[in-house]
Amino acid sequence: MKQIRAGEFKASCLAVMDEVQATGEPVVVTKRGVPVVKLVPVRGQNEIFGFMAGEFRIAGDIESPAVPLDQWEVLRETNIAGGSQSSVRRKRVGDKGKK
Image 1 (cartoon, helix red, strand yellow):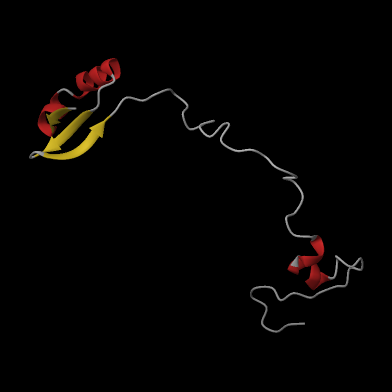
Image 2 (cartoon, helix red, strand yellow):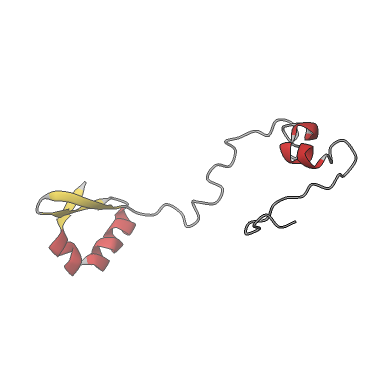
């Protein structure tokens, strides 16, 4: 792998980038002999989209809730799961005990 000093890289940055793109060989930029960054070519424009395509298999229903509705706490509090909609008064933020 090719190495280049930071000062050289700064002076010829665009040329180094063109070389990496053309050859596909990464270049390591160093400061005082210590590797700082690695310049690598990009493989394709939109690698982020579809990179996991074909990695998973959908098994079963993915739309229905994993837990039955009668076990949902929020529905139990308002008694909607049982059919009747009893009114539950909830305290709003900022209420100071007003009724």
